[in-house]
Length: 100
Image (cartoon, rainbow, N blue to C red; front, side, top):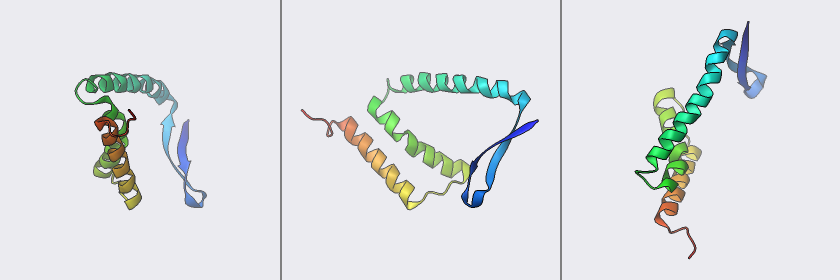
């Protein structure tokens, strides 16, 4: 039996993905494995670049990768938000945003 997991869109229609019961153990396993890999890679990366820069710019890279590989539209609001995030991360790493 398939279940539909989706989000609501304008007009009340939903778009989703059919999930088979047999797929649930794999889905449950990928969650912890993905989070573990994320933490290991993040901690490894923090040894090579300023730690304050990795986390703030992650949404910027997510938006760029979504545009490149998934066809996501980069609107003016998304570009402005990405620029603000990158600027804030840069200021945080430069020490300009700290009080002395």
